[in-house]
Length: 93
Image (cartoon, rainbow, N blue to C red):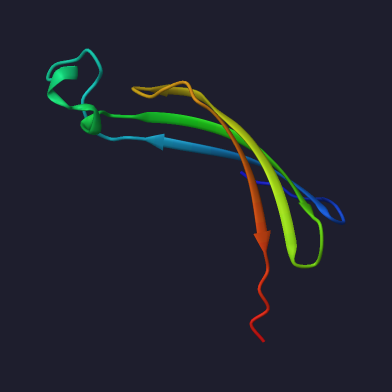
């Protein structure tokens, strides 16, 4: 799911990401022991929702701000994410 242009030089997007692992260990389940370095083998399921506001400050430059968080999941951390981005369009002609 995503969005588009809000007005001439401002964009808005809403993003949803779902990761549904099909196999792996469960925290506290059989075969799990935090001292045996099994964390990379966990079945990690994540639902992540984020939103971005972007501004075209010129014909070639764009800045954006994104906020998102894990809204549900298993064997994952309850995370909040914030980012600031800058894009520049290079003329190749």
